[in-house]
Amino acid sequence: MEEKFNRLIFIPIAAVLFLMIGYQYVCPADSNTCYFRSDEKGLFQRYSPGLELVYTEPEADEDLPSKITSRFNFTERELDRRVDFNIRGDDVMVFLHIQKTGGTTFGRHLVKNIQLEQPCDCMAGQRKCTCHRPGKAESWLFSRFSTGWSCGLHADWTELTSCVPVVMNKRDKKNTPKSKRNFYYITMLRDPVSRYLSEWKHVQRGATWKTALHMCDGRPPTQDELPACYSGEDWTGVPLPDFMNCPSNLANNRQVRMLADLSLVGCYNMSSMSELERGRVLLASAKSNLRNMAFFGLTEFQRKTQYLFERTFGLRFIRPFTQINSTRAASVGINEKVRWRIEGLNALDVELYEYAKELFLRRYQYNRQRQHQEERLRRRQERQQRQRVHRTYLAELWRLGIGGGGGAEEAEEEEVEVKVLEEVATTEDYGSQVVRW
Image 1: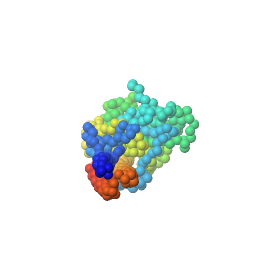
Image 2 (image 1 turned 60 degrees about the vertical axis):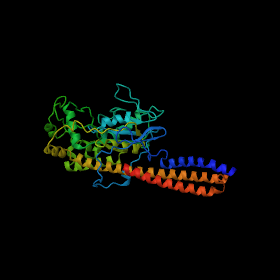
Image 3 (image 1 turned 90 degrees about the vertical axis):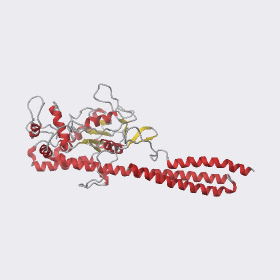
Image 4 (image 1 turned 90 degrees about the horizontal axis):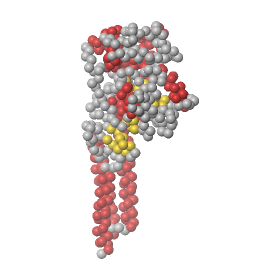
């Protein structure tokens, strides 16, 4: 009689346990096997303890070719960009802001949209934010919206690499050797024709950047080395043909010039080598510096830029980036002849952008594959752990003698059910990934 009563009690308890174990197999904790679609179209949100918003899927409608045309050979080391950014230590993130590449928007993301233990302090009405390390009155970010133009207005790679260590040591009242601090350079690039037209429209409205220093090898360029394109205070209302006809216009190949080491070509001294050789050296230097930067993004791929930044630095943005294609440059109608002329004036930038775009998309593709592999490995480890716990539980039931003589058979049946559940969960995991891919 007592044995029959034990069996009756055991059956509902075992059923409840099986339901709980089965649910954990199908919808494991901290997994995206079971997910919920948010109100915003195309977004899937995953949550983790201690962080509100951990990751949002990149937009599916961004222009990502199903097969990337391969022109350049990149090593795995060049694709696998991971930075152990020590925000509590001496590491500094340096934003190289190239004009009209969406840098203002990205710069605001850095100071207002990153989820940090100690967020940047941005006071209303002030242009700069205070971005201190947790528990220290030291800045971890060198950018327009944190430290201001401390190395000059829109300082380029040549200026920043020689200026930033000195400025940051002075700000933090330190005498840390340059070799002891990690400076992680980041930047944004944009399609050269769109960027050029955007700069023309900006100059047409009165922008000059006259206060830019253009320091190189310890001195600014002379008037002969960098003559002005206009007389007077600014170039307001300049027609596009006049803008294109100025040979010393720094809008030409701006992205290559600002990313290259100008000391390799005699700075702004055009007579130090032929124009062809100068262009070759500048392009090679810009490619090398871009490739070795901690991170770069592309204006045309906002959500993928967000994703790669988060993967690179292990930091998370609070709100997703927004892709805005209705820019002033997009509203400018030009014919093919004008486009060819602009591409010719920016031939180095066109080559650099093609190189950067392929590297960017390959890094994105590589990181997505790595993420899927990491998630599959994590789920497999979770299932194995739950299996071990479950088997230990069954063994303990058998040891206690619950279920009487039929305990062994019931334990075997339970293990078979667990294996079936595991196979179903594996199939569902794979199916969900196929849908997401």
